[in-house]
Length: 418
Image 1: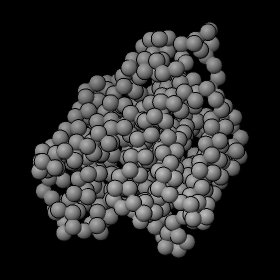
Image 2 (image 1 turned 135 degrees about the horizontal axis):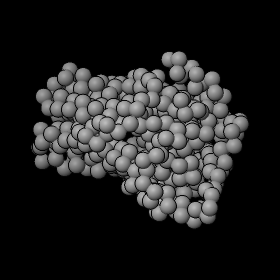
Image 3 (image 1 turned 90 degrees about the horizontal axis):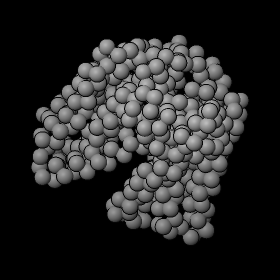
């Protein structure tokens, strides 16, 4: 815990982390409120449309917003985004109070949320290196991951409680206020959070747009393997999101309570894993650790095979505890090996790629389960989750990872000069 205390003593980081936590908790409560209003007015079909509106625009948002994070002040983007989304979300309780609320308004809010979600998700890791010393990056990433895990657990629960107390429309009004609080806290950060300083010798032309970011990732084996291996792992995680409701319905007495228990166990385990990993020191064997964790975590998917509630609960706990450190350790590698002038686009591209594999895995899970291939799906999930770990261990068993200027010594020149 000393590492967390040290990084939270940095005022600017504390403000950023507090703002992010409030933002994420508000988002979780908002999803619950939007889903409750939608299911009440449009049933299960409406929920499906809402889900598409919330998730699909993230990919489009990543393509559009990534370059903005490297061209404009990150502080202004954070603040403008928050104020705008506060106004958009507040339109729902206003329309409800006036009796004008229609489903298209709910879907529009969800579309805007999905489109702009990448600003805090990619912008936060992009600015963390400006706020904390390199020795504190792992603790900073651990706290960021912890905030996400805590929000996944507490946000929807807070939303559900508030719905019973003040009504779903008023929950959205509170979330609008949380966006404004986010903007205020960001405005109090003393660091400039400005656009990255332009590179020297006329190279600015070569680092604008998406092409140099793709080149950098392709030519950097650290970033390339992290992005691809995490994307494959997330395909297994996406399939898991389909497997758990299927098990709760068809194997465990059609019980929504069991589904809630399994999801809560998994989210709580990820939270614990994030807390533990963020307190560790960055190691020269960082990539080797990631590969080993991926092998072990991927192998644990096999425990889903027996369809036994106790065994599956144990598997989810272990998968959550061991997979969360992969995110934290990988975040340090990505931040350290990405030049400041490309960090916004790079974080956007990598996080969008990894998040985009979740629906692919969910679709794969649905196809195999519809054909009664549960055991086959478990095997596929295990291969997707574990196999990249073997490749990571093979490639990086003798390749050290270093913080600071030495982190870039083995990068191919084409990564910057393309």
